[in-house]
Every structure is written in C-alpha cells, then in structure tokens.
Image (cartoon, rainbow, N blue to C red; front, side):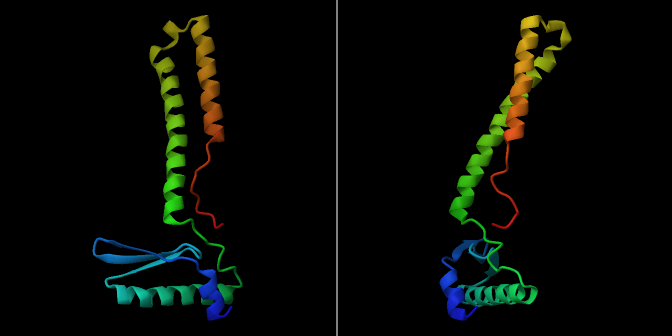
Length: 137
C-alpha cells in the first residue's frame, strides 16, 4: 500500500485536549497516540500510522481489521447499552421484590406473577448484547 493509498483510506483523525495532553484517535485503523504539543502530536500520528501499516504488512493482516467507531458513534452505542442495562436492572428489581416477600406471601396469583417476572428477566438477559465489543470490525 502506498502513502497515497493510506492517506486516501484514512478519512478522519479525531483530536482533543485532555489533562494537558493532545490526543489523536484514528478510528479507521483503530490506533491512538498522545503528545504534549500539537506539533509533537503530528509527528506521533505519522509514526503510529506508519508502524501500524508496517506491522500489518509484516504479519500479513488487514490493517483495517481493528477499525473502531468514531467517538460520536461510541456515545450513541453507550446510550443504547445503558438502555439495555436499565431493562436488566428493572427486571432484576421486580424479581427481588418477590424474593423479599418470601414464600409466606406467595399465593397462586402471586406465583403466576413471579413466574412471569422470571420469564421476563430471562428474556431480557438472553437478548442483552453489549453495544460495544473489543472485536475488530
């Protein structure tokens, strides 16, 4: 892959400043680096991109297999995951309410409600999938 190919393939470099450091994320290839100044950051970005492609060539791997979602995509995925986790917690709290009352308060109708809560909890947990994974895309 030529330098021109690499430059064309990388669509964005996200840069932000945090705790005295400039941080660059290259989501198209899943790498990031940091430096104290912007000029140093530019050099570090060039080095990390070159090293990433050299390593991929050396090992015969796809340099884009580690592509990460952009920061904006990560925020949306985290929101989705929070909603899923909230559903799990709400279902668990419903089960807890049955367990706190214990068997002494378990009438036939209440037992049916308990079974429905158990089934609901299992369905929610079975459908839960983390919004963000560590697997390459």
